[in-house]
Each structure stands twice: as structure tokens, then as C-alpha cells.
Length: 408
Image (tube, rainbow, N blue to C red):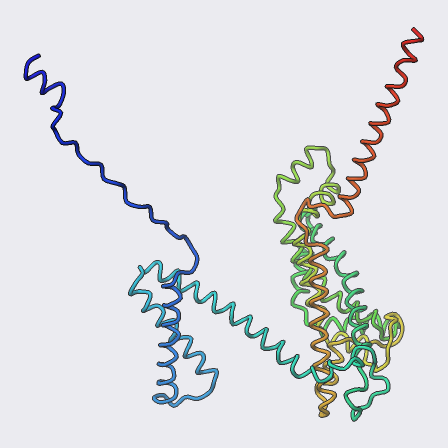
């Protein structure tokens, strides 16, 4: 082996080998969330804009008023946040985070307004709501100068629940049926029905009350009652339920309908067993929106149910008052105790609406295809019955086998 072969084939043993460098440690990249820089930037923009707003609003400019101060502070905060963001981020990221700040601030503003309204009503109505008689007595034996420990709103609570229940019973089937007709059946009559529903959506509530007053009470001779008020509320609720239900039904995938038709289902069975169960959560939302429209109406109830201080649990006979009408009648009186009762009734109305909405969500807000407890228990009973029948059949066949063999 020559020297040339040695140099070409193998390296000398004394030749140094290059050292392998360790790879740099991995750095985790956090996607989304709120970082410390975001919080400090927002706090810096809030503090700086507040100081600048105070100097401009109180010392330089001839302005006054809390609303103007807050609006100016918010405008300066957005400008300051944009400037601080440009010092550390790119323009695209600055725009994205600015939009996020505007969205978050709008949501917090809405929550603050709701909390302020609830707190104000609770503070004004606590004086009457703290007494048990407010929820157990009516105003039949209570005058304007009676103490706060006399009288209540039980007759208005019962009237509101009965009128809203009857209106929901009338409006929901008609509204969902109209939505199914417009989205599933169609035809030449679908467009006139949709136009009529859209026109009824913007119908003033007083017009619905006048319609029921003229047709049901004056023409047909019915007396003012909770039933007449529920008809007026149903006229207000039905277009809301119809439009919301139509939008939800149209969101059901067409492949589900095609699969039902491919299995031999008719259009009626497809709508009843496939479309409506799939759209159930959205339909519950439509019902909730309709109830929200009808529960706070005052003028239709005033024209069709009248006002009374007596307890009347029969919505089909005599006058019946509701919580909105109770509030409207007593909040404009010059007596502090009457005003306190009106605010307590407002707090009661919010509680009743919250209970109704939560109940509607719990009852009808299940996911499509999710079984109820009763359906699961029925399936379990059927499975146990099938297992018992199979075990009895195996025992019967086992005991009958020797007899058959002996016969042969």
C-alpha cells in the first residue's frame, strides 16, 4: 500500500475530529391568550389617557359632564393604545389587537349597563320586596297611603304567567308551522307569507292591541280578560318566532334530508323526525326571543285586559292585570311606597323571565340526537327485556333437547 493509497483511503489516527455542537434549546411559541406585554400596554394606555383627559377636560377645554369625560377618555385610550402598540408590534398586529380591545370594551360596557340597571331596580325595589306580603297579597285592600307592609303583586305575577303561557301556546305552533311552510314546502304562496311576516315584525304593539280590541272585544262581544291580552301578545310574538325559526331550519344540512328521502321517508316524516329535532336548540332560541318580545308589553294588555287590583286566576273571565301594567300604573304615582312596589314588581318580572328562559334552555336545549333520561331508561328496559327473553329461550331449548332425542 502506497502513501497515496493511505491518504486516499483512511485518515491518520492523530487527525482531530470536529466536535458536534448541541442544538439550541426549543422555545415554546404561545399562540393566542393574553401576555404580560398586552396587559401592561392596556394599563399604560388607560393611565396615560386618564391623566391627559383630566388635564384637557378640567384645565384646558371649557367642557363639563361625566358622559363627555368618559367618551373623551375612551377616545384618548384608543389613540394611546395604538401609539404604544406601534412601538412594539407591526401594523397588522396593532390593528388586530385594537379591534380586540374595542370588542372587549363593548362587551364590558353592555355588562356594566345591565348590572347598573339590575342594581338600580333592586335598590329601589328592595324596600317592598323584602316583605313577604308583596309576593302573597294583592292590592285589593291597599290604598295609596297604606304602609309598605300592606298589598303586593301576586295577582300581577299570576296574570303575567297565564297571559304569556297562553300567548306562547298560540304563537309557537303557528310560527313554527309557518317557518316550515316557507322553508320546506315553498311554492307560490311562500313569498306572500314571508312578506306578511316581515311586515308584522315591525308592527307597533298598540296596533296589535287595537286589532284585538276591535275584532275580539267590540265585534265578537268578548269581555276584557287575560285571554284577549294573550291574543294580542300572540300577534306580537308570532312573527318573531317565525323569522327566527325559518333561519334555523334553513341551516339544517340538506344531506340529512337527502338521507331521509333515500331511506324511503316522506316529506312529513323527514321534517318531523329529522329537520325539527336537528334544529331544536335554534327553535328554543326562537321561542325565547318571542317570549322576550311579549313579556314586557304594556299597551296591548291595557287595551285588552284592563286593570284591576283584585286577584283573578281565570284568564277567560273578567279583567286581569300583568306585571308590566302593574309597573306602569304605580311608577307614575307621587307616593313613594307605590313607586317602591313598582320597582319591586320590575325586579320580580326580571326574575320570572330569567326562570322561564333557563327552563326553556334546560328543557329544549339538548344537542341534536341527544337522548333524554326517559328515552335512555326506555332503551335500558327494552334491552333487559330482550336479554331476559333470550335467557328464557335458551333454558327452554336446553330442557326440550333430551325429550326430542328420546323420541327418536
